[in-house]
Length: 272
Image 1 (cartoon, rainbow, N blue to C red):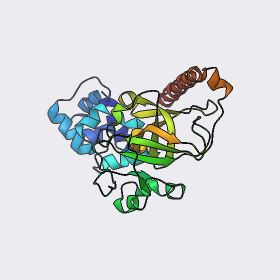
Image 2 (spheres, helix red, strand yellow; image 1 turned 135 degrees about the horizontal axis):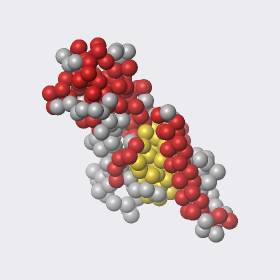
Image 3 (cartoon, rainbow, N blue to C red; image 1 turned 90 degrees about the vertical axis):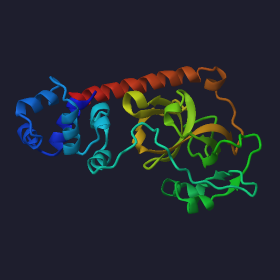
Image 4 (tube, one colour; image 1 turned 135 degrees about the vertical axis):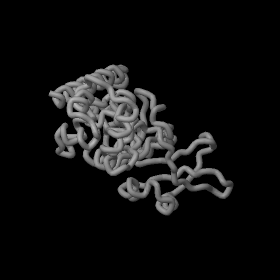
């Protein structure tokens, strides 16, 4: 539970003293201080008052470390917007169908790539994308193809198109598997994911090219996730020495552990 940390954070954001907040809640200062310092736990009626005062629902007040949220997320919560911090909210996906009433596989062209982060939920934008079908893919699942740039994910090379299966529940993302991740800041990225929703509300993104360092992305910064299905490479790639010796997975595992250690050190430094 994160109640005491959240109460202190929210109070300081409002630049209020403990005595001011206590008076607003019809409490003594010592009673409120005991909640903020974790000495005592408030009953349901007090929790309701705390929730109404800070305009944060009780579940998030108790179970979410609000200190890990960015400024935009915090301000949205305080304005009454109920954010999805777990990745489980039902998402409405814009899609197209063919003449047989079957869902198409839309292809996000290189030209359309820049506009995808703003148009991904717009049916009119999705209708402008080229569409095709692959008979060997399940008709009961949704697929989309994305252009990949850079050399961070061999054997998938620069200019390839990666097809992904839409992921509705992000809690089902499997560690060590490749996914296409759509974020507002980074756009379309293709990475190996490690699911840390339950522990930290984040994903760790790793590259198969060990020259690229892993990094974390918060769940609320993600727009869509697509599970890798297949790809079309524009050129033939010769196997590298690393791939032929089969030490790539071991290096990526070390890379992942370094990323986790860095994050833990960063979290400790932020709390000091």
